[in-house]
Length: 72
Image (cartoon, rainbow, N blue to C red):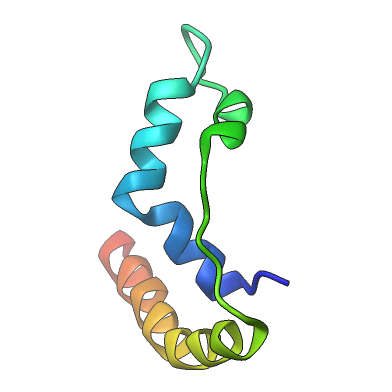
């Protein structure tokens, strides 16, 4: 069980972004599918992930709010 807030932070992490960059294929449009097998996620137990999600939700909502404001 990976919760969305935790997944968002994992995917945005520098390590995962670098892995995607290294193993992406394609010339015009990069495809990250092949990079998935090279990603190593260190996941915690369900209760810790749930707590992370609870704490992360207001922070990520603020990030999204700020991004919308920047666009406007």
